[in-house]
Length: 156
Image (cartoon, rainbow, N blue to C red; front, top):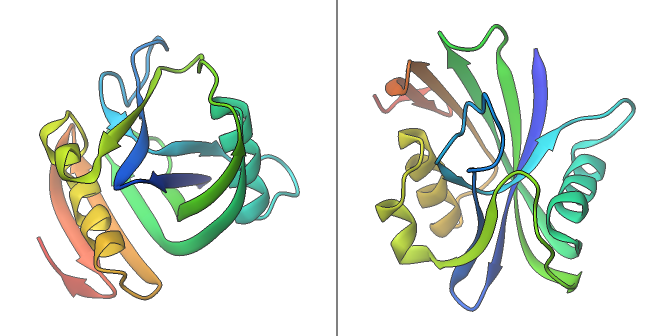
């Protein structure tokens, strides 16, 4: 079991996204995703996302919201991943270069046009609709989404 975090930082109708183009053997290669990463020992979800955002962007989160848990199951992963999902609307600092890819402010309406995991559009829609805290299960075979279950209701 792997615990990770992901944050969509919002500003002026845009999300700060990471275009994953720099790491070798990256399951997210060429995809556009939020900011985040794996938990370190003794971290809470909030500790982890603050650290990951600072490491990857140079920004310090000052206003964030814990939005839900996304469970990823994939035939390409050895372990189930529990991703703790956040949004943030407040931060300080100056954006820096990221060693995992290119950071870019992307208009929210343009995100769907960029290469991404199909399941991302499900949770991004939930974020946009300001849904209460949710549990979303996404199962993949290769890069194909084969199952989506939101709060015990099958979507796909």
